[in-house]
Length: 506
Picture 1 (cartoon, rainbow, N blue to C red):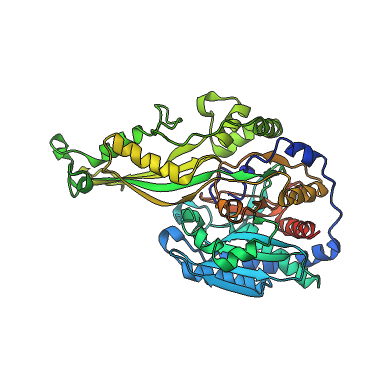
Picture 2: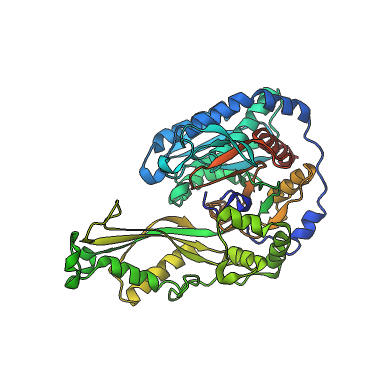
């Protein structure tokens, strides 16, 4: 999941333009009738609480990390096991040119079918940076929040996904029939840019099953700490890559690390990379200056209206505190900063690696340097065009020796506000006494393009009550028992999925 914070999650993790009338459609939506037998279902969720929590803790304790080639096949096997236990009759592990995926179907004999997108991989972690061991999934008290489960994958993405599975267990445990058929697609490469998602979702058998669905959604825990919730209509696309400068490729500089005193007579691949990076953006680092880079369409009037409403309802001060920032780019006002968030592509340096990085100094002239880059794209910009422009730019500026190693990525995604998938979300949220906020596009990314683009052309989004934070960061957590009645705890998240499935089944 790639996202700036839980309050802005699509997953991941976003929103895209639905329609100028989207707000009017939502404003007039009729609150749905209560889920049939809801009291019995709530009782079942409560009775299964301990089992559900244990299932999540066990899953967190077994990390699959695509970037480290850790437990990928085992993680797929584990995901398949969870699907079978939740009632999926057909469960198949599908091999790709990368990590395996899982395809599962649950035939409830229902009129409608719904697609589910899961990921079983998680981000890397350094236990030294955590206040609680990241694989122990301990439940701890978090002041102002409540009891939370802290662990890698707690909210991104195992917590919300386990809550969806818990919803299936509860429906079956209460002796009720699932109101929709389900088609599950679970990949193990989301955290490295989903490079083989097409081989999974567009496998002929999987594609045929997905084509019969109303759309595909990814479970999420989308409430902020005040209880607010956003209906996400899309997400930015992403390109993930490494730029590598080396003496070997350049033909200048050393072929191995040498003593730093030799800088007086030997070129530095590290400085070469720094100078190349400087050509990609403006002096302040905030505007892309790559030659012939795909242009982002101007933010529309409909998107501006969504952002204006969101800005009026969200607390800028609290969001700055959450992020640990004091200023927005160019000291923009709150609404203008949010408009920029949804409408602008970015080139970001995730990390720079060169030479010695241990304690103290080590006087070397490194033979190579690596910049880890992500480039965010908005609808109207294509992944392939962005990569081609970057490569051509480096070559034209005399940096053709710098390697461009693309590891993953995909186009942006958009879903109409009046799609059945989104309308059902709003009805469920309003029935729960919430007032959802429309958001044009999440700044984070998830591979929803594979569902929304041809050949599938489906609606795709995220849904789920509850709260969590810290995705990709230390001390990631999922809320279990909330200290704020407006924010759902784990059982409330489970019930939100039950309500959503019943609404989609109507």
